[in-house]
Length: 398
Ligand SMILES: Cc1cc2nc3c(=O)[nH]c(=O)nc-3n(C[C@H](O)[C@H](O)[C@H](O)COP(=O)(O)OP(=O)(O)OC[C@H]3O[C@@H](n4cnc5c(N)ncnc54)[C@H](O)[C@@H]3O)c2cc1C
Image (cartoon, rainbow, N blue to C red; front, side, top):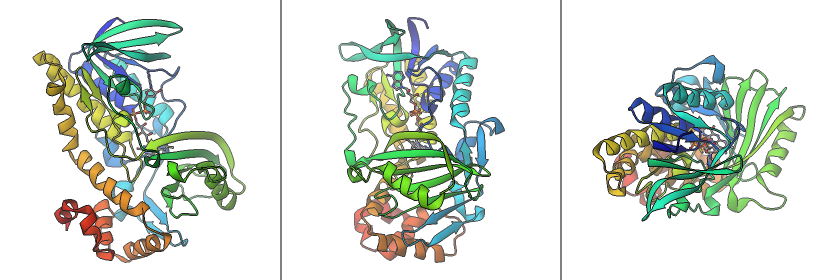
């Protein structure tokens, strides 16, 4: 690690890897600092990603694909099973990754393109000059090193502290943190090519439970529930244990993964003077699905593209960097986040009976392709008052 880079990237997840790789491809110097001793581990993810989304960034490679999904299913609170076959499952058709290898591959590619990588290196504080971010103090093996940079990309994930240290409000309301637990389970009876989502207040209040296959008889079996629904005797793990006991009584748990996912709106502003915030740190997870790998890669890449432009022009002010914030917010991804936030807010308020009605009703549609749009249209048909809640958004899709 040198003591000066064009771009310093905090965090070696998908957002950080794409930021560093893009920066060096643009001719800049870049370094990723990652606090963990190894990239990709421990995994805190169900590892699902749509095929098309993934292929926007990298060609599929069996080394880091655990399973290929050709369908999806939703289990309603009353136990009704809605199967979405490959022809209609749309973006739900995809891969279950092996993120220990996938994340490593992304950082590997950044390194091969010319980025420096420092593991077991924690950004402990920003270097600030008159409120402008000029780099970070990085802790490595008990020593602190000052690393200067023209731009810092904060890609430090859901637990992000860097932007807060730079004066940005990153608070997530408790109700919008999904408290999550996942088991990697072996020796269980599953459909190895279908992701299954379970809904209902008894199963996963204000959230959902998932079974994402990892092989013929193994899967990520996990749950996310709203932080405000979690408490003694009814934590996410309690719900998951009850489900596992009933559904996979003979299964073996070979990994236990706790974690949190933010399902709030993105940060009000994802830039500062000399600072760009990407991925989970920017709160760009899809609030409806909790999926954030793709959005992390999109924002990581864009952050570096904007950094390169602004470095070229010699202007790293917040005003100049705002093009990053504006671009992702008005992109398809940004619009989907806003739309899905409204749908999530609507769905979590519905009692089980209403969720049953919605799922039964959607299952009767002659679907060409299941998509969020199909879901909204059906939701509006069932509950015309929703138009008022969704406002202009609903009007634009009717
Ligand atoms: C239980 C669970 C299930 C999920 N399932 C899915 C799914 O199926 N599909 C999907 O798309 N998404 C899923 N997600 C979300 C997904 O994991 C994240 O959106 C994605 O990893 C975000 O990438 P990122 O690069 O922004 O952050 P991360 O992958 O979290 O990477 C951030 C990195 O920054 C490092 N870091 C933090 N602070 C510092 C510091 N001060 N200095 C140096 N390094 C630091 C961290 O160690 C970490 O490696 C899930 C999340 C959870 C918790």
